[in-house]
Amino acid sequence: MGKFKTGCLGAIGVVLAIALIGSCAGGGSKDESKAPTSSSASSSSSSGEQKQKVYEDAEINGLIKEAKENAASANANYKKKNLRVIGGRLSNIDSDMKYITLEGTDKNYSMIHVQCSINSKNQDVKDAVLKLKKGEPVTVYGTVSEVGDLVGYRMSLDKIEPAQ
Image (tube, rainbow, N blue to C red; front, side, top):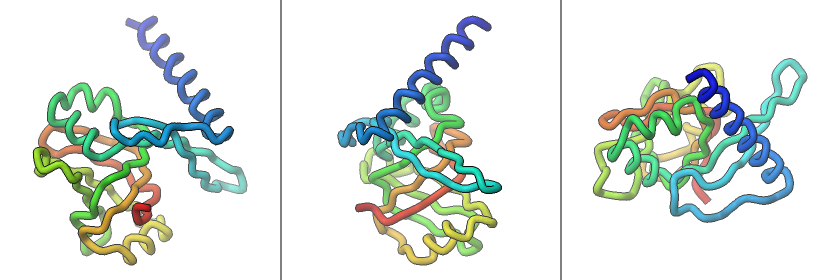
C-alpha cells in the first residue's frame, strides 16, 4: 500500500506541474460540462514572498451530482483540493459572515450545496460578500475540507466574485 500511495502522490504532482505550466502558457479548456476541467491560479503574498495556489475548475452541478451518487468517491477526489467552483448561485449569507452557501441549478440535487467558511481575517472576502445578494451567480475559490452525500461540500473560501 505504501508504493501505491507514493505512486499516486507522484502522479498528482506531475498533473499539478503540467496544469501549472499550461496555466502559465495560457492553455486550458473552456469546457464546463464536467466537474473538474482546467486550472486557474491565484497569488497571495506572505511575508514578502509570492505563493501561487492552483485551482481546478469544477462545475457545481457536476460536483453535487458526484457527491449524491457516491460521496466516498467525491471525498477521495476533492478533499483537500483547491477548486474554482463555477455555475453556482448564492443561496445563503450568514449574518455573522462565518459562511455562505451555494446551490446548483439542477433541481434533481436541490438538497445538496457547497458551504464556504469565511476566514474572519480575510477582509477582501468579507468586503466582496457584502456586495453580493442571494440568488446571484458567483464563482468561488477555496479548499475542500469535507464531502458528504447529505451535507454536500464544505470548503474554506479564499476568494469570491460575481459570475461572468
